[in-house]
Image 1 (spheres, helix red, strand yellow):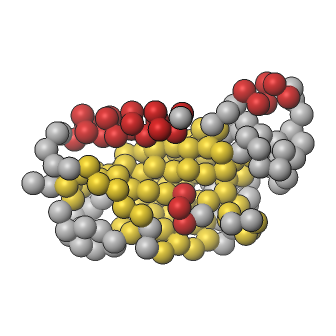
Image 2: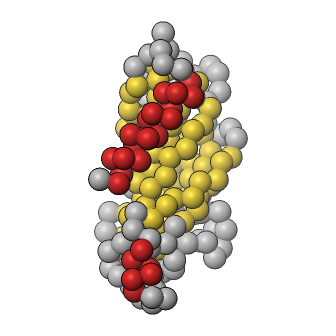
Length: 173
């Protein structure tokens, strides 16, 4: 439910910041790769510089501002505890670098369990985040590439897969 509310707010923000003309559309990745450690369908970015890369087919009728919506897993360390946020470094088509904090869906788990950060076997790891990005012209029908990296050692671990990222865009008139 929380994810649906956040997605709705994100789309509402998107529409109000770039105008009301054009339909809102969603893109899914055509390809995905990562050098993270593969565990149970997820690639864990555990070390500084580890990356994940998504490639999307760019439609020929989109406005140059897009929303990147991430659904990931986050924990504090290898086999860590639940309720932690993580930070990622994001670049779109090799342009500007953004930093995004992926918010844990249930941060109260940490308070409920105290300072215990023992392995919860994935319970309470889900996290999410959305950000606005501009894509460079010309972008007509060219691929959109998004690269995410773990920014530095010591940061929380983030797990991603092909379905962890969706692009929301608005059609141009």
